[in-house]
Image (spheres, rainbow, N blue to C red):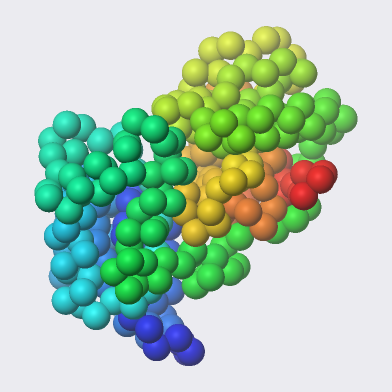
Length: 278
């Protein structure tokens, strides 16, 4: 039973996490309302019994108005957002003012998201992380699968952590793929799925590569936490890679039971890591 009587607003992108959060609210009888982001959120989720409205990325003014009309007090931003098309970005007046205020060209993705949180909270709505609503979603420390990383995989993980930390400091990406000590690629604008696809073509003979995914050092826990799901496992398997090391306590596994079962099926490992120095 829900002990938080504050109405929850969900800004929903793609992937399975919005559905997971909606199910949690339904099961715990927590009042909620969803803003589903066009060209990102899964249309199949939003049946007539789910309180929701669809908006474009550029419709901040409409979004604020709807959240106020619904008496939303707390907001979670969850799910993947693809790079918007020009039609997605046609801004309303509120969005135009927001972009003008932050100086869009001068900040990276994290800077924009932090500014968006500040803007939302100026409207008297508190932004919370999904881990504050569903703490069990955070990655646990240690090996999560039957298969464990061997000596070479552990060395590749260590190298991946070094690179991912520097990548994160620059607000570039969260993920790195390392094979036999060689950095095959780092995540940029394309996202993790495309990184895996790209690196699959670069692999050398012998044991496959390892995906390392860490939260950026300066990253707000309420937004864009590193996430893996069944698609991540399928893509890694198709690319001939052997496992994942992901930031324990600082990242999410969408549909954890099925993700672990699929990794076990493919003899892949998933381990929650706590990098030294934290």
